Image (tube, rainbow, N blue to C red):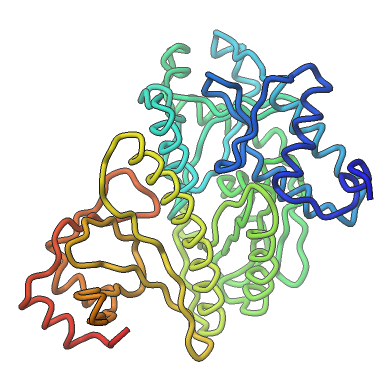
Length: 406
């Protein structure tokens, strides 16, 4: 199979995909990009601009059985970078193109770490955003045919407007693009069918949601940017169908958003924890997998930043263990090791690794006994806790009494 045939129909590795994209850029006259494997991105030497490939690679891989879609995915990626629009200098001129974008708070936090890594952490250049619900945030974007450009706080200052006015304009534009008949329902389950990169953003159109015929309070699942599912809190088969189909798209498609369910109460979205035991177990499994991925990316960036700054402390991993078909997460707190711990179900305390003096304690019990030694690190999503000291001997004995041997 030659290279072109492989691009159209075969399995392609990340490195091969990057080479395909580099060739496509070169055909458009952009031949100064370099591939950075650690970040799975193409970069212009000496500049901060980058083409991150994760989302397009996921779409490209998913389209393996639809051969005609793959060249279009590459073309769209190249166009989005080579056709970056010039943002109008006046709010009046930009207003018709403003759109709201739903983002995961972890994605936002990772982006801030990237700016730290590249030493360009100007607060005015951070995205303009506001909290929306649970682990979701709402951002602003300037939308054109080939690109969606996130807007920063500095842009609003230059326009002389506040965030409230900008978000109101973006919401109005979203309504203009929203045909209510595109929320297609069957058996009390509704699926968004706009396919315009703003399906998930319509979660903010609560007036639209309340028009749907569901059993009980509306429950939403937005596994990625292009997916928006709605059913009722009292529709258990609907909830199971939404969770099953949505979770598959969350991990297998690009632009992943949230692994959580949200319930609409009195016009506001709140995190919804499933009441059914089977559904709750499924939700917890999905959430754990997503936490693992977020923490791995976070650890990689923190390690790179510490290498640049000379900071010397251990960034602990989010580990997933399984026993008797039950999964749980655990991190490791080692004696005499300055560490940063992820939030896990349990903590593994390593008193003496050589003599295998190790035991595991549920997170809540560990916090009761040694929480005073755990300092939450600011600005990190998912959350981490810095532990510079190991519990004293008396605390260790109390922890050992409520724990189990590793």
